[in-house]
Figure 1 (cartoon, helix red, strand yellow):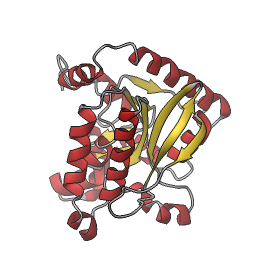
Figure 2 (cartoon, rainbow, N blue to C red):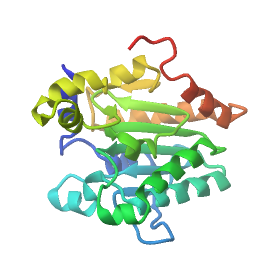
Figure 3 (spheres, one colour):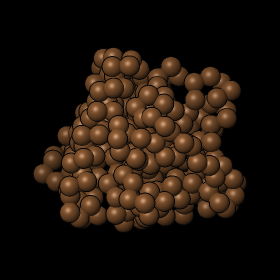
Figure 4 (spheres, one colour):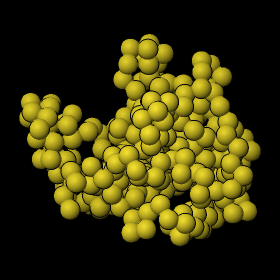
Length: 259
């Protein structure tokens, strides 16, 4: 399977979304709303939940399945208030010593005039800075598209996992082809050159685990993922300096790997 085929799979409307993962991997989810500055951005959902016997903060970029849901959730393109809501929840998690789990699925942050006027770039940058300094462990799971800073704003984590057919890139293949080749129809070639697949990310040390999709969406799939998240979080909680662990993870990106 080539890279652009994986992009197509990552974008499928029937693919499980963040809400599906939250509803199936956790119990007692209590959603929290708003950034306390402007409004509640439905492109990002988050709150408190139980991962087996462990209280956690869970946050996800939600796309929705139906046309109406996709409009409600801005097709998974968060605005500044969405990222500020996520950061508010993460700071609350740090205050109460709750581990954090995020689910990432976005083609990128919302690119509109209003979003720029309300500080889209600074909201993303603030998330990157603040997440590096969180005193609690963070696991990010890329479940579909991981597009640019809009994805990284929820994936500055101690561990990053990717679904087998998820992708992670600084730009979409179509955008890259338009810029480099002046022809968006060459997106398949751009996808190969971007090295955006989970397999590429794993080879560069950008993700620590690739999650098989043989039974994606089934009860057994969610049960296994939930168990693996719990096991990994227990290991992370034993690390003495969680900030240093996160820092060293990012420092090691691409080390010793020929591109």
